[in-house]
Image (cartoon, rainbow, N blue to C red; front, side, top):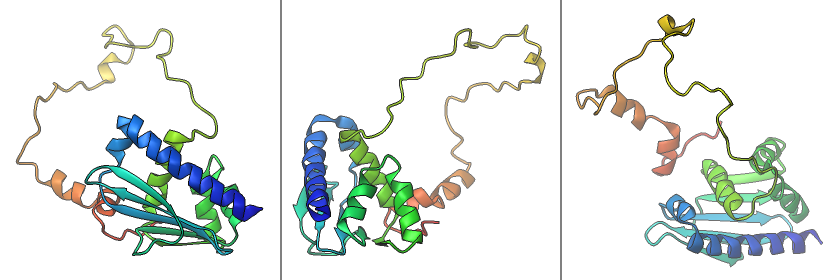
Length: 189
């Protein structure tokens, strides 16, 4: 029963991702590089998703990926994979299961978080938060009559960044998130 549930979930997810890519500019904006993500189980279920950054398309295919994958998740059983992937905290559950050696992964683990974000765009499981509105009586402009107005430093607005400030560029190049997107292997934790 677990193998059937996981197969159906992964196939439906593939259809929803393809439809969501056509309808949502927000989802298309997320697909910027060529990636292959594979999800499989120890009892024979396998499905892979091919993302193309060139034309921002998604292909979903049953079975193992024919070539190398950017991320491969392998669950011990299909039922474990199904129950993990439908959880609202799926990424946290995958990390806990990886530490317990019930899930193995190869490739860049950061792509699990990216893929989970895409799946939640088309399959919003869990609690949906309402849009945030400002609190009643919220401070919308500086109040010079406030008790703490003298303690707040206000800088003039900069219209452009200083091009001579090279430390910002070198610090940006060292960010793990940007290194992972550029294909550099980053330690997940």
